[in-house]
Image 1 (cartoon, rainbow, N blue to C red):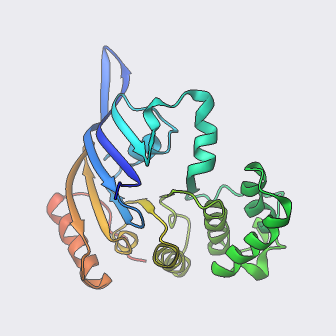
Image 2 (cartoon, one colour):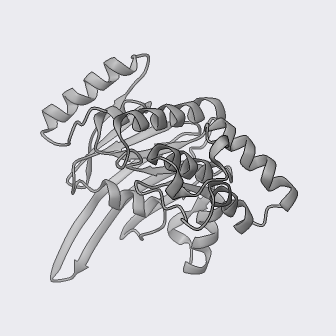
Length: 255
């Protein structure tokens, strides 16, 4: 079975010839269908740059990125917006909801842009809202609900189009500990019940412990990899802390 995502010798430079900074140094890995992968690293490790390259927000300096059969690095500027819309789901730390739209309208917007038939939109939004436990808040505006409810709305919006890959960039960063735990449990449930492929970028060991595999970045390179296997989440969390301690990097905020 071919992987959903494949990176081959990715490199990323910033600056000009006289002042070059290498943010990513020869990173290669694959993500299988239905995998929940976390990428960890301290500030400046390259994890956000890597995510931006995968999401086509930024271009790579060298190497190739494939999403199933598509060579992402070959896409032209006019093709990128459609590619993101049809293949990627995004969950951001600051929600990125439109305050002038209700939660229902925020979720529906992704389907409307993709020209989904009108009679399909309502039932699909309702089904996703029930799954994410926000059905009773669909008529409310973002400023009328909690941070956790906003983030579950953002999660619903990201999933409603059945993306090949769900990208979550520090999704618990703006949440309190209870809301963060609820969101992470929701992501794990989506991964297990819908076989959703999730790539989570985080500096937090507690968040990363929900994943099945973790890549640790340092100075733009993959320092090491950790697989959960048959470990409980508590045991996996302790192993993550051990790796962070030995590598001398990363915050370990416990929600």
